[in-house]
Image (tube, rainbow, N blue to C red):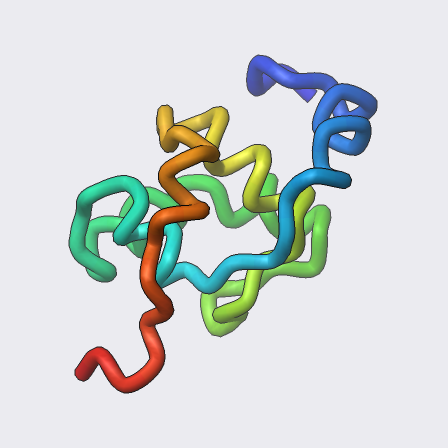
Length: 88
């Protein structure tokens, strides 16, 4: 895969994670939604392996794990993130 974690490593660690929205991941990373979207723009080809496109809002655990690894998001911070519903 060439991105630090092999597909097997990502798969084996995903059992303890759940799906998260892009908004929740942005909050855990401490960045705005637009900055987070910019980060992901450069990873479209890689994320498309998991069926993720720019309009996908809820990311599967395998993608959450990979994104956390790529961008240094502490997975424990995800547990503390409040929902993005009605945050507008």
